[in-house]
Length: 467
Image 1 (cartoon, rainbow, N blue to C red):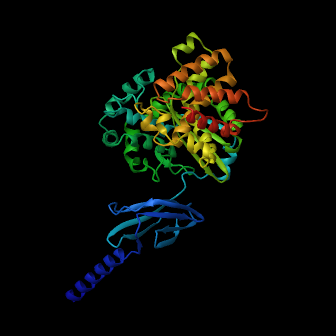
Image 2: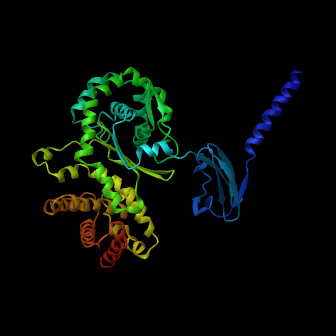
Image 3: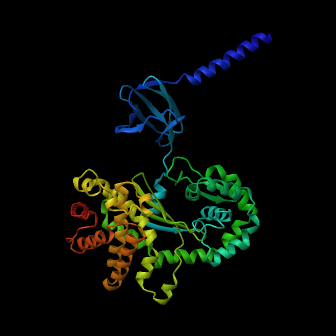
């Protein structure tokens, strides 16, 4: 009897191992493959890499729906009708020698806007310091890196002194040590985790997932989710809620500054007017009082509703504002936020012209536009990102002209041109900016910035040819 049971057990184990390993095999003689999602195909967009085990193709499949995808090599293909929250494995046999273990992983949409959400947020500008977002920024500021790194913490405020007084006893909490270890290895995880925190809120002391947002980082998995228990432990041990409530008046004053002085709602109106085919239904500005990270943005579209979400540090009024409280100073304080918002409009518009000769010839040589000894050469490693950064920085000038007096605006425009060229390494920015201003001032009645793109790219091409 024992022998029979042992035989049956071995048979089951063998059968399971065989079933798990008997995955489909397709062949290829070329290390590139094309990917089709429904009726959209990306020609030769996939590089077959046997050394990755597995190499993952991530596909967005809305919950409760299906999507037909096909992986196409030069001699073979495999197709699946994908369901949400599932994975599919297959092997690509390259030149009959190398096996590339490949996986298709499905993920839900990053954001789902139901009809109630749309009704409450359409044509709105939301500015807030969310509780979970501030909580996570506080935890990162307690790490060894955060206590010493200006990329994480704003050390120069009364709020920071309050933070140290309240939280210094909790530097050895488990989540603080975990986060410190994470960013020691990969600092970019700091940005991902803090952004993903906005997809959670707190109810009765429990961190709860939003029904609207799945994630905010550029990947496919929410990076905040694995640490919920440890973050909750910190929340209760440190009495964070009491700290958050005690600073509510300060948060409200800063939200008012963004709304009334920096005038984020005006940014929304100005951008929607000048890029009418790329209109966003809702703008959100999410910020932390303690963080000093640069503005970062993400953009969502679902159920015919478009939303732009910007994460920023608080733009504290400068001493110059007190000495010379002009409207232009307030505009200057909001530049980072404005630039991050305008990316979403510029990218959408610029993509329409990528196949044109003016774009291809103008930006063929990146070194013509970006100083290879500057920090920008590492940020803008392709021609499209180069065009976007030129446009986004130059839009600041047009907004200055529209809102403030020409004389005062020109002072700041000249400073900006000098800064972008000498510090940011945008070699032709002064000429580019002057040309854009000229095109904008001389535009026909009813023309928008979006309408000027052909003329902008024509100038870029001619500028390159006469260089």
